[in-house]
Image (cartoon, rainbow, N blue to C red; front, side, top):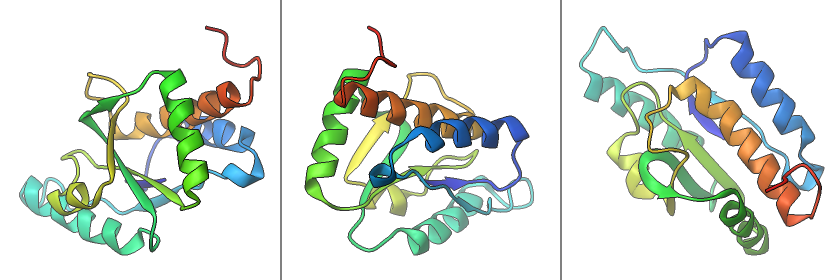
Length: 151
């Protein structure tokens, strides 16, 4: 998981760490933080471009890039479990990208193989981290038939 922002409230890290820690070793969820652009000091588009350049430099080679954005495709938990199974069969590393306050740079969006919307709501970028980690854990538990998900 590649996310813009490095100084977030403690609850963000705690929530992410809790769910990421539940994942099995073969589906390890790691967080790489990218410094925000100079929001408030420069125009938002420039700050977003700065973040985008840093993000593109950190995406692992051959990785499947999935951007998190309001305009992306929504998946139910069961659909995400199916996606997770496909990604595992693909064998490539999956890199989820979470933008900063201004969103994701066009260059990052252009590199994405999939665009995913967690909600039609615009979520604060910090909140996306623990929500994404929980969604991935839930999808894995569905795929494995574990009782965590009771729908």
